[in-house]
Every structure is written in structure tokens, then in C-alpha cells.
Image (cartoon, rainbow, N blue to C red; front, side, top):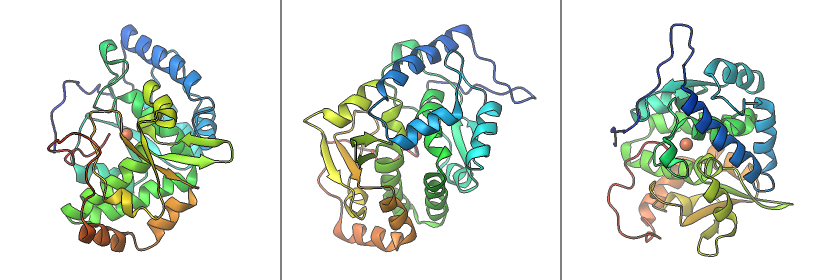
Length: 271
Ligand SMILES: [Fe+2]
């Protein structure tokens, strides 16, 4: 597992307050303003509704306490600041207890458009809106409970499912193709390109088997996306025989990667 980071976690004081510098707040404001225009018409309705329910400040980085008050009122979830990269078991255990582990630092200005590690804009703006949606939040909790019990090989497969849904999922709606994945929705470039780039491969999610057999990389715009017909598909997968599907995917083997050869692409616990 990758446990190195060039960023340092911002630590809360005894009251839970995390102080941010003017420059860090300005970075948030830049990201927030830009992304709030881009998600219109591109993010799914559930995300936009979640964004409205959270009512995050646009000029300053939100504090966990204010996020938690709103999240808990919606779904009972909360966010907890953690170091940029944490052990898998700790990560899944937090999710299993309705606690979203969130990086507390914000990206450097020179990485405004892309960074490999999850920062607080990714966590709060990209992920928290969908955590106001009860069924989607339940999906993440149930996924984490399964991951905690899984063997290392099974867990790698489950992490692919998470990657291609919670992080980089697309959904077909009556209003057209939309984004719900937090990895996409915290990236200005990918929020657009995931929907329209002709080079991107968009595959129907179906029962999730193909996603389980698909490799990914964290250090590039995704070459492959999986498209839901409805969120019901996610719940059907999770409440069906998901581990049976994982074993079937293991038997069938990985599909050829849609990117140049790379090593260690499965070792990262989260985005
Ligand atoms: Fe993420």
C-alpha cells in the first residue's frame, strides 16, 4: 500500500477546529466557484440536491463540525479528518460505521487541476453530496462491511467496484448521461471529458462483473467508465451475491488493461 504523501494532514485543535491559511481558503474558493458552474447539467440530480442540502461555504474551507451537522441530519453520516493515506482496515472500519474518512489538507495551487491524492475538496465537494442520499450512503456502508471480511484478493476486486462507482461512476438518466462519481466531480477537466471525450470507453455497468475484472490507474484521467441505468443496479449488486460475483470475476481473470503497462495499480486504498 502506498503510505507516502507530499502533503501534511491539517490537525484539528481541541475543539475540532482546523485553521486554514488565507491562501488555502482562496484555493478552495477557486475550486468551488469553477466546479459549481461545471457540474450544472453534468452531475446527476442526486448530487446537485446533496450540494444544496450541504450548503458548503464557497469562500472558506468548511469545518467538519458544520459538515457533520448537515450530513447527520440527512443520513446520520459524518466526516472525520484523517491523514492523506490510511491503512485499509481503518478506512473500511470508518465507512462501516457511517464515518467518511476525509483528507484535511487542500491541494497546492500548482496542482489545482489534478492531484493523485484525495484532498479536502475531493472529499467534501466530490463525495459528501452523495452521502446525503440515504440509499447511496447505505451502499457505501454495506460495501465497507463486506470489504472488512474479505480476503486481500477479494478486497482488491471490491475496491475496483468502489473505484468504478463511488469514485468514477456515470449514470444514464432521462436527461442524458450524468456523473455521480466523486473522483470525477472534484475534477473540472474530467467532469466534462468523462461525458463527451470520444476516446473514453463507456461500458454498461450491468451486474458489475466487467467492472470487477477491469484494472484501473489512479494517476490519469480514466480511460474507462461504467454507466448505471439506475442506482437500483448498485443496490441489487450489493444485496445479491456480490462475493459470488467476485469469485466469478477471479475465475474469469482480469481483462486486458485499457492503458499503458503499469505496476502497482491496485495498491492504493482510496482516492
Ligand atoms: Fe475519493
